[in-house]
Length: 174
Image (cartoon, rainbow, N blue to C red):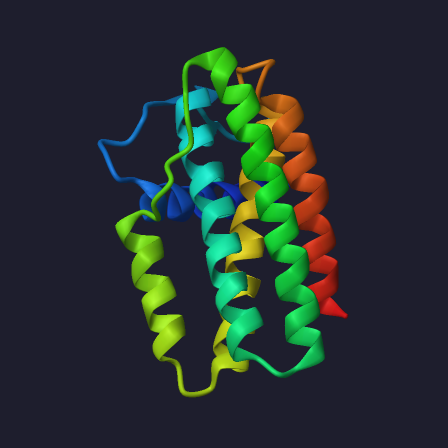
């Protein structure tokens, strides 16, 4: 991963954490690399960010399946919902070993995004734009933790999340 990619990943992670933080942010542990220090999320911070992103994927996709008549939007929404449920389930299972449970409610930031999406007059465009940004940030979140996360229990979940989110990214680019 090049320095530019690492900087973009760190920026994306910071945005995800900021959007997902419903409590005080969990500490990050800097990890030295050959080009620059790249913060790696703690297990708790990754868990909170990933579970919030998964829940938002499910809820925004349910809304898309209700509001859209575009087959491509519906196809993406079904994929995002299925993947969000799968990642959320794996986080819930892994979280039991770490004494963590995903929240059943959206964070205020994600709720605001969902509310804005629900009010959108051009729903399909708004949904696709929002998912494009969310998929990009979530992919960076999962990839970063999969390669540098400190929890052997959560790294496989991050690898699965990265794989599923990369497929979503490819679907958005088609």
